[in-house]
Length: 479
Ligand SMILES: [Zn+2]
Image 1 (cartoon, rainbow, N blue to C red):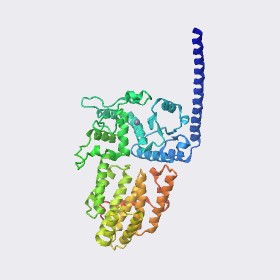
Image 2 (image 1 turned 90 degrees about the vertical axis):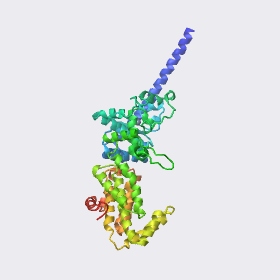
Image 3 (image 1 turned 90 degrees about the horizontal axis):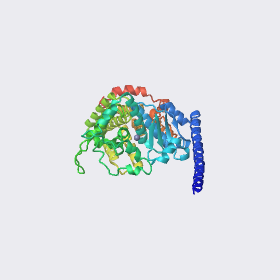
Image 4 (image 1 turned 30 degrees about the horizontal axis):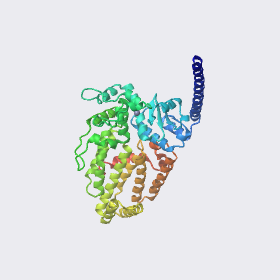
């Protein structure tokens, strides 16, 4: 009996050793492959990796299939990094796009895949940031917020203490679930034991999501990420909701407001965040009043307040958007004046703005007719339109050039020059729209910081002149 037991034991030990050795060799081979890929790409980086490093000072690591052959991700990463650096610079040793394939991961990622539920889309530790494919701008921003938190508390440890005070109940007890439960929840099989399926009203406790209750670092990253990428989701917390037929009045969420203000104080989110969102809520009204030919007061208030904002918060991430909107108000104001002098122009303009069901070609025809009638006006509206053009062109030279606003401004400029009868410059902006599209499709990682201003300057657009023109023409658009 004794010897049979021994034989079984020896047999298991022998096979256990063989399996362990096979496992080590197998994983050793995957690691050799992984390092070889990193070394090859460091020694001989592709244009997209070189340009990213040149622009943002951060190496991009990962496999060709996840970077060069996956342009959507690298474009999202570049725009978010540019945006985050505009408000507060940060340092990273690298950003890695993680492969989905187990055999292409590094040993740590392999352990994480085996041990955890693997539901995280990003991570940040030791000055390194990792992202899964299709992580999206929100995740990139979230992980950068972690890095920024580590950097802020090195210089200002009181930031953490102040935040912690905002996450306690009336008896001073912490409202966080805690690290132990948070991390255990991620572990395979036993994770279920730590999962609390009772949905707590996290908003009332001052959190922007349930995940933000995990611990202080997740709370900071979640709150700041929302403010940066999806700020409009926070509007009801920040400003409350006025009573309406569907809802009673909801007051603003003082706990979330206090966290946002603290984040702003330490440059974790753009400065002037709250002021910008107040401005945001007044724009639509100001624009509609002009478009419908009602009055100009609201637009003038917006122009005045946005001038104050831009003076108070230079190099804001919101500059590109604000200047586009200022340009649109000035352009609409021009039409407002012109329509008041021409009944025919007024009719076609109103038809255009109210034609929600028109096709694209019908809209184009109306735009052409509006342009023709505008040009036929005797009054000189060039100064008003010049002010709009100046704002649009200043929008193009903002520090952070987000895709939507920058592209929209190119179209706005094309339209303005058409209205002025300057076909040559209108054509230039038409070509610029195509140029932007080509660079975007070719994964130009500098679009958010440089746009295509080199292309425009190469064709005679000077951004310096507009600096001067703007001083002459803003202040309610009146000359
Ligand atoms: Zn996180």
